[in-house]
Every structure is written in structure tokens, then in C-alpha cells.
Amino acid sequence: MSWRSSYLFCPKCGSVYFANQIAPVVDKGSMHQYCPNALCDSPIELVSIDELMIRPIVELNKKGYTTAYCCSGHDLRGDYDRHGYILFAPGINLESAPGGWNLERDSIHNRVCIRSQIVDIAITISWLNDWVDNLKPYTKD
Image 1 (cartoon, rainbow, N blue to C red):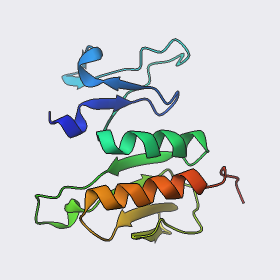
Image 2 (spheres, rainbow, N blue to C red):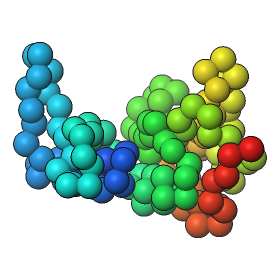
Image 3 (cartoon, one colour):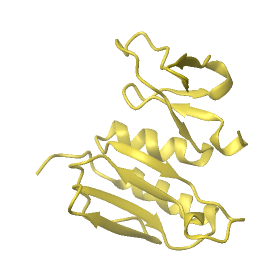
């Protein structure tokens, strides 16, 4: 596990943990890590999160923009996945994307995704944080 994915995020309560803080549970041959927060009244599986994405993802979820997956990007890889992205939960709608990011719509699955246009992670995360700071709380149409 790299430094970039050594954090875990609870999508229910918004808590962030170091991965080595949470003991894995083996269930039917697969390892899972569950949120220890007493407010999460049922086993909520934690998801890996890049360190640079913690702040924007926590803030987006606080504002009601439920996220599903994200990645800050990979400077050293030569494929399409080197660009950062945030995939939102079904039903979340966005009017725009941050500067330097594209807004992609998947009408079949009723999802939106924002994807960085450039590979410079420091710049794209800065633009993302500025956008999140100025984003109004989410309201359903």
C-alpha cells in the first residue's frame, strides 16, 4: 500500500483513518475494514482514499454531494488513469466542474464524473479545493 492510499474513508460518517489503525476482518475469504465509529450503527465498509483527496471528498460529502470513487491522479503512469477523477453517486447532478476538470455525464447509470484535464496533481487539486470551497450545498432538483 503506497502513501497515497494508506487512508480509509467512511462514506456514512465522513471519518478518515490511517489504514493501519483499522484491523481487517476476513469474511468469506475477502478482507474488509469497517468503520469503528459508534454512530455508524451497522458495519460500514471503509474505502481507500488518496491523501490529497481527503479534504475535497469530505467537504463534498458534507455538502450533500455523495461520492462513490476518486483518485488524485498518477504523475508517473503513461495511461489515461493518470488523471484525477471523482465519480459521484447515482442521482447527484452538477452544473459545472472545477477549472481544469471535465464534467462527464453517464445517462444510462444516472451518474456524473469530473476528471482532471492535466496531469499536474498539485494544480488540479488546488483548483478542485477552490471549487469545493465555493460550491453551495446540494439540493435535489
